[in-house]
View (cartoon, one colour):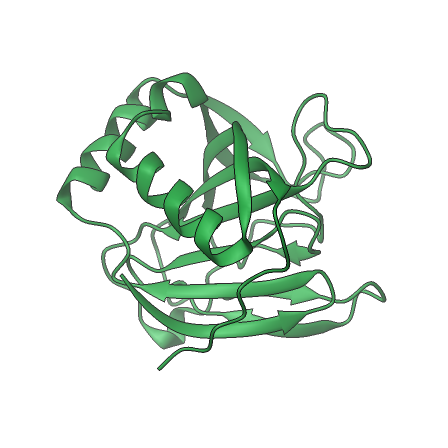
Length: 200
């Protein structure tokens, strides 16, 4: 896993790593997916509307906890954000296709309180991604102005505060398949300020 970018945001640092998953991680993700439940996402009303929301697969944190991928993410989060990870709160695979919709949002989980602190991990799952396919993940400031974007490069890992406003990217018409990403949300307790080390 190689740190290739640290982006300062209003919400805290965004860390971008490449080559973050290996064959064992892929096996874990497939196991989670097979036990998951399809869920509708991206609709502001909570029901299917002309917004044409995208879909995802909600998965069990209990299956994920204890895996090698879980351990890898915990170690990276705790070292970069100088915190202790309390629990895996939510895990799912998000799927999006050309013509669907995503909304600007901050990440949440059932029972989340206003003062709860979280870190979100996103792993891009497509084995190949071309620049002309688009699908960049966008990050916004509190005025909802887009300031940063990250391409969905295969095997790329993002870590960022769950309070950060962002929107998943929709692929262009040149991509006829599904853009897929693993999303994991962790509740954390800070021990100190984040370790804002730059990429080399």
